[in-house]
Length: 329
Image (tube, rainbow, N blue to C red; front, side):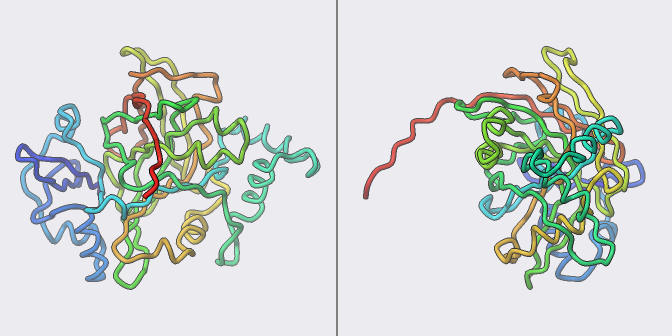
């Protein structure tokens, strides 16, 4: 089952479910957020709750997408209570990339960058066999719900940014229950939009490079993440594809388990506040920036993978320069 959200002709949020090859409105659902909290409070599976609610009329989700009526597949009524975060150095990449990476890792510690050392730590300890937590991954913060771009909406790059590049990923979607328990709603396609030029100046600039918009959806896959996710990421410019490449995700293609990444995020009490929403992106090994692509305003990022519904599409736009001044009180 896949869940999504649109606004109808009256401006009201409608929850849609893709089930048995049909996309239909979910009866009596105010939002995916409200449904997820109800499932947590009643100890019901989210899919079961949707089936219990029942379905209304069929909806043309692709038409709503073209009309700009698709919204992020989950939101919080107060955007400050939605957290955008992610992990990096978690994916193994293609067979060729893995071979090249292992050759680098064969060098002594003195020849490895901090990034390569952390990548090796993940390979050696990101999938613990004893069931306990493994090594902690790289972690970063991207912002709150104000930084979320809806599917089809522009990803805004700051005027001061050095680069505006896509990162095709899978994101875990979570709500926090009344007792502080994290509940996983499901998984979605995500574009973890970043400034790779700034990051390369110095790895300590990673935090700056990640404070950007992100997009996820249009649909949430309810249920487990497939072990082997195979998708495609592309950039279109004036209707023509200027770059395209496959991307891999799922635990078969990762150096960490999903459970390990979740543990090291939610071990912090800050991230177990009742009612909060978390969108946590799991990383990627595929970037157009690595192939020398520099994006232009108007370029459209497109990310798709079987089993995740419609592709995630977002054009690139540049924000106007902000006049920042601090006033004493």
